[in-house]
Length: 174
Image (tube, rainbow, N blue to C red; front, side, top):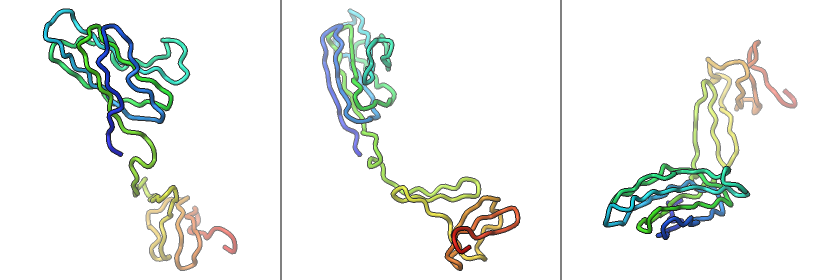
């Protein structure tokens, strides 16, 4: 899924502005730019998230708090997660700051992929949340398999597990 601009704001001085309210989990960052042409007054910027159902300021998550932003400067926050129902607020002590929030929705369809990973002596492959065991003939059993290793034996068309006494078929009619 592509990165999307989720909100823009050029707020008046000392005004807390809701720049985005999220209807799903997102990974976002905020860019702030000082458009002023004079150095006074000093500009300070704050960026914070009000979580869904938060009732007091102590529950807010500050991403930036009173960061000095001099004439012609800009910065981008690190990426941070938001949840459905959260609201992102920005505030500047001068009216010369422009804010932009960009992000990507976090869900299973955003990054579809098949991954094959090896964990010590076990290989797990997944496709649509289905796990596939290693398979092969009796001769292809892994020599270094530990007790508890499970695989599908294609000769017998049955699962087998490595026990302390050797390979044992498991299941019905084993």
